[in-house]
Image (cartoon, rainbow, N blue to C red; front, side, top):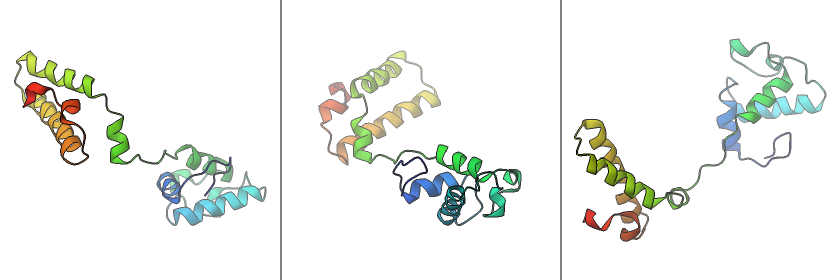
Length: 139
């Protein structure tokens, strides 16, 4: 699927973006608005063609399409791709800093536990090297 400016996007991306501005049938409604835009009905009210929330009933077809397209988020990366972007050295340093403070509060303990979970998942589920993810003294 392509946006009005030719950008390739998935139906999922359109559905998520359109759900912020339309009432239902997000893909069908978006396509209807694009069709009306191409017919030259850019200044008509979007509400004349599709169901919109009451607070957006004065929005033009062009404005609605622009709002939907500006709300399109990039495709979510896979877990592996996401974990490949983590700076493990920096994460280890941050965890060690928290441990070295000696301050024992629930929020700090929760952050350390969260970091542990990230590290364990990377090693146990995604197959990352233990030495890359954990500080050797963690074990």
